[in-house]
Image (cartoon, rainbow, N blue to C red; front, side, top):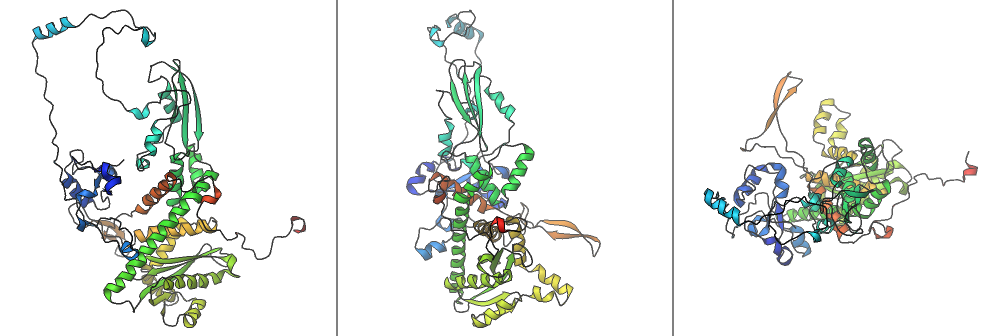
Length: 557
């Protein structure tokens, strides 16, 4: 359960009843993080707190005013409950709770030797017989002393109980939706087994243990000489599935990786990892639906923002300005997939994309025109009007614009024209081609050297769009004093070092949101990984792109 870092605030108890939400520190804006820490006045988190601990600090919504939140345009259009998202300048300012001050411990006053001697005489004498390992019921408890000891970490203690008991920490971690955010460490197996030499309940030696692996999770069943036993797990479970399996599969796909890369890395490190069937089951049942849901939500919000901007500017009839281009998974006439992308000229964000498979057409070079037509039709059906569209010099698209969309102004991209004009003009035009930048990002998530099915290719394209739209406009990095950061680089033409601006580091908040959605789907039991019909995915087109049917093996030469 998250808790508010403001001293004296306990609104985590009212989170479910009154709709109190918790905000994390704006880690991408370090000067504003220091303002937050200075405002909450928590001795545990001073202003000098390192940025690595910002993820553990949360402030509830009771400490912000209404003007600190952004307007939810999507909720206003659809009549839904607005999402409370803080603005870029929000700082907590409401503190109805008194700040608790630390109380200094007083040193005990020294006592005289006579007082110490008198207290020692009142203590009864204890037997000096050696302590045996007899059961506790045989011990004489007529004289007992109450001793206070420091509490120790219960997370490393194996749970004790009957032989069929399981780890008691699983239920607690499973109830915490933010438990997966905790820090994780790769530990040697032999070092883990050193913790299972003695029973932490009675201190006797552990008689036997059984070590097993379930995916990336390690399980140890143990029992000692006095009959105490239990089961220890290296991570909690999510509906009879290790939570680490979900996190490994999600982090691999959300960063553009594949199972082949994960398998090679884990084998080189000799690390226990999930098998390929588990990876693809999790991908089909949870990861792809989570990506698709987040992509659709982002595109609806982006279209709503564009429509509202047209209403505010009074240019609803004028329309928007777009640029489009296609990207295939392999060059030449052997391409299987083609992704046509439409980008807004102003904000440089991806408005729409359409994936086409060659099986639906006779030739691979026709896929660009098919993707262009379907993508543009979806934009027009959404209620947006297009005023200007810039594309490459494809003859199919130019003919389609003249016949089907004559009311839209059509222009050709200067980068494609400049390739045959002059080398310097081509270099200048290439610097401004943001679509080419997106295509290089798309190759990261969907490498051309590997083949994917239709759903895999589509969701990897959506991942590239989510990454691109989040990091479209990079702001210049600043120091903690507010000054711009500059770096010295060597320039070849003047043959000297020059100053260049430093751009802020890319963010990946969409991956954290996707991981939250995957954990929520698994906890809610909305989809079962073992049930093939439980995944809300579309049927994939046939993978075979050959037009001639496959003959029997006996007739094949």
